[in-house]
Image 1 (cartoon, one colour):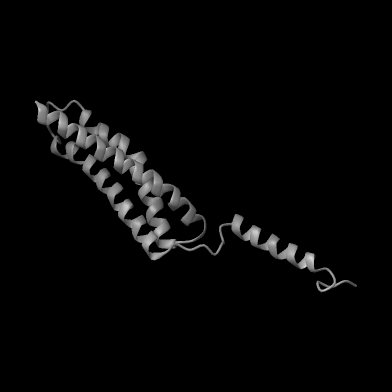
Image 2: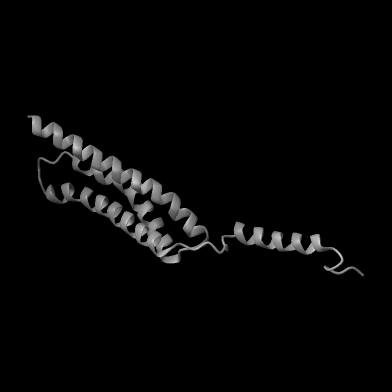
Length: 132
């Protein structure tokens, strides 16, 4: 009869196997720091702010007989881009570990890119409107 003391590599192998299975299942010990969680919330609020901002033109043109439907384009594009990113970031900030942390980190980069692109377009729009 062999024990783990006879074969030290066997106990090492089983411990590595258990840790790999836990990490695949999302049960790893990586947790988000409080600063990272606050960053998740800030970027999520910025993305939700962009989404709410896209709802303003349809609200302003509600009941306008001259409305041609182009005020809904912002909502059409903002809903599938900013809302899922914000939800993943909020979930990552609340849970803060495992697969939700991994998803939130990816959503963080996408959310920052969306905010930077939108602010960049606003700056270009401001410059174009100030020349006229």
